[in-house]
Image (cartoon, rainbow, N blue to C red; front, side):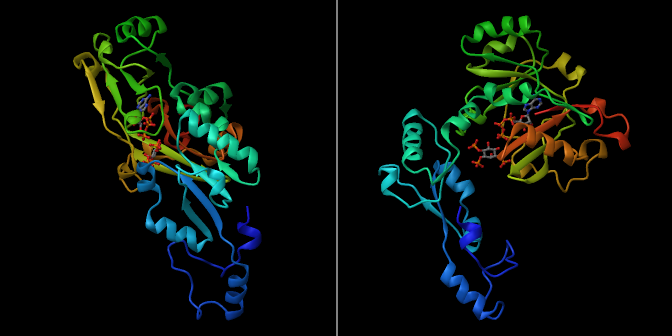
Length: 317
Ligand SMILES: Nc1ncnc2c1ncn2[C@@H]1O[C@H](COP(=O)(O)OP(=O)(O)OP(=O)(O)O)[C@@H](O)[C@H]1O
Ligand SMILES: O=P(O)(O)O[C@H]1[C@H](O)[C@@H](O)[C@H](OP(=O)(O)O)[C@@H](OP(=O)(O)O)[C@H]1O
């Protein structure tokens, strides 16, 4: 990437600020900047939903200040005729697009494709998405890292109750579409309280045991070495009493989206305590995740002593 070597600008750029003016940095430095300025060009191929949420004018301005230019890829024209790009950033799926990217990578090895289709294939399916976490079998001094017990139902809603019974999954169950392709539909989740209602679900889906976690979870963002953790409100715990009384399938909206931030909320310390940094670093390292966001649920019933919060917990991702 050309950013560090070739693009030099005034020191101390504040992420929130406009570029510095002449009076703020030396004329010599500015001239040097003009001579050396070479933008990192990011060609992007994203859905209109993603463009709206991600490419906000403020973000584009900030990127420009840092020497990064975002340029839309025209999907109706050959990729090789466009650019030149330093990076191709995409979040599209489909066989045809995959092939286009693979061909482009062959002919343009100098361009960083984020991410190569092969490397992210497993993320398009909620079952394979969590498999690497399960396979890792990570047990640290902070606790065991695992995934909620789950079952995949490919088709035939009438067979779900039997399958759940055989697998020994305990109700209530969170039902998630198997495919995770970034569409609004792929985020439509439901909570099934009783065996009989399971037939109302729509395969293909993943059924996951509901993990009580105190109504707050942690969303972890990893970019290279940088790790950022935020608190989000989540589904409330399901009590035994509620379970004995409630039946049916309840669809729920995106409960832990950015608008559901719990960072400034006055939370019980037993649910507010952030996951320990070394644990997150270990997770990122073990999984070799370089650019990712994931959620951590935990079981609060294990949180016995405040001073010992994150010791010996089951940590669910
Ligand atoms: N096993 C579980 N036990 C309890 N709550 C869960 C479980 N799985 C998911 N949830 C709740 O459902 C929400 C959405 O689940 P998940 O993150 O798997 O779906 P998503 O579509 O990837 O989410 P998002 O819409 O935030 O991208 C979580 O934020 C959490 O509140
Ligand atoms: O805003 P946070 O809490 O980081 O949650 C993100 C989800 O984790 C992503 O999965 C969403 O992207 P996709 O809908 O492309 O999967 C992403 O969708 P968006 O980019 O359309 O906002 C977000 O919902």
